[in-house]
Image 1 (cartoon, rainbow, N blue to C red):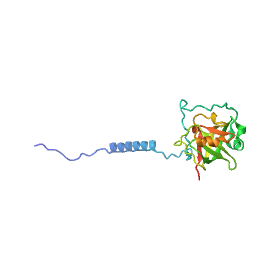
Image 2: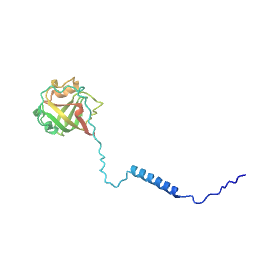
Image 3: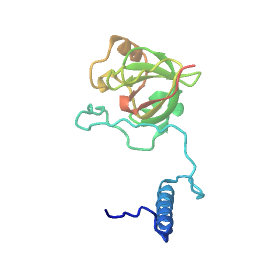
Image 4: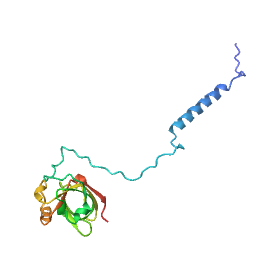
Length: 184
């Protein structure tokens, strides 16, 4: 019978094990450095203020503009026209004011504490604009008008009654009304 020697021969090298271990460490270090997000580089500060969203308006679906000839002059702040709105007929108004009273889905009063002016929204959209008394609203591009006939569309009875005794009122698109502070 043949003899089989099962003893281990000396001289086995440990060098392949060391090279393999070093290669594994190198791969681990490369992966760690690729996904490490804790760099010592100064990063820009993170802004935590909410970003205001602007509504997207489809020009084809937009209602017609007011029929009055509108002066394309400078924009007047809302606070300036509240005292005597009739002096600013057919001019553009923008600014912030407090909602004093909501009359209908299309109409509400804004005031500065002493004087008030009626505001008409281009179309009733209560699900989009939940305007309530006491809120601060920003109106962008409102038009000062004098007659209900200048307003496109059918007005509710409450809205018509509110503007009958007014020398002038504001007409604004629903997309241009922004609630800046909720009622307290």
